Amino acid sequence: MNFATTATRPRQSVLATNEVIRHTYTLLSMTLLFSAAMAAVSVWVRMPPMVSLLSTGGALLLIWLVLPRTANSAKGLGVVFAITGLLGFGLGPILTVYLALPNGPQIVATAFGGTGVIFLGLSGYALATRRDFSFLGGFLFTGLLVVLVAALANIFLSIPALSLAISAVVILIMSGFILFDTSRLINGGETNYILATVSLYLSLFNIFIHLLSLLGIMGNDD
Amino acid sequence: MASWMKIGWALLLGLMVAALIPRLREVMTHSPRGGRDDWAAALLPLAVVVAFVALLLWLV
Image (cartoon, rainbow over all chains, first blue to last red; front, top):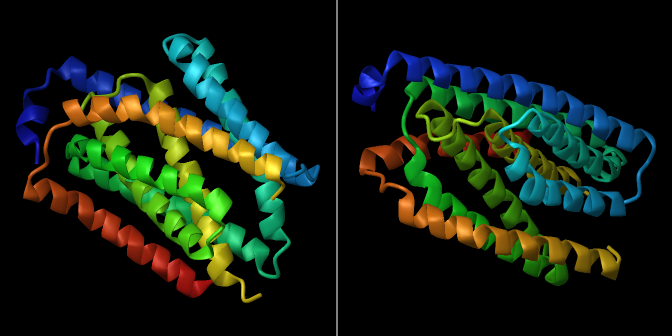
């Protein structure tokens, strides 16, 4: 455990880190609520499936092109809400499909609760142990690259077992990213709460989507 | 899924892969190596996540 580093870090630096952590979790809670509201609207107005593709594309463009330029200003807050709102809105057509299943509401609620438990458990673990998980970076980014290539191939191959494996691996990788990102917050590797919020939100979003997919496949007898 | 949507998702995933490669190179050169204790500390909560997901799948 990194007690020595914690003990010798200047008090001001520790206070600044705690401030970043507080701001990150506050913004994350607000964006999750906003995202859930946007998803509810999207389900309510019965958005067509292409909305998922367009919203995800729009959110990714904002993450790649706009967020890096605005993350250090107040405009960054608006960009975070735009990203999370778009991703939430894109969830609508997916949720509509799952809610139409015989035990759909139960599956969606289980995925939602399960995601919350995984996030709180892993964040709590990283915050309590204050370990440095930055060594996981290479492993997580390589895993993510492999899983993205597999998902790309499976769009055309449509192999159900591969879909199942991809979902399981994504949940594992995103869980690792929660440890990685939280430890970066604690150890001063990430000092921008806007960027930290987006990273943690994306991990949560992906865990939810893939847990939903796993529960949908395994929980549906048809 | 319609063909144009498959192509759209494939393009999006392709862009994600392209965006990830420089970040991966950066992380591979700068991230520290973990010791046996570090890996054990990371794998323990991940194993709990696996067990938890298995429980959810069993319950649903």
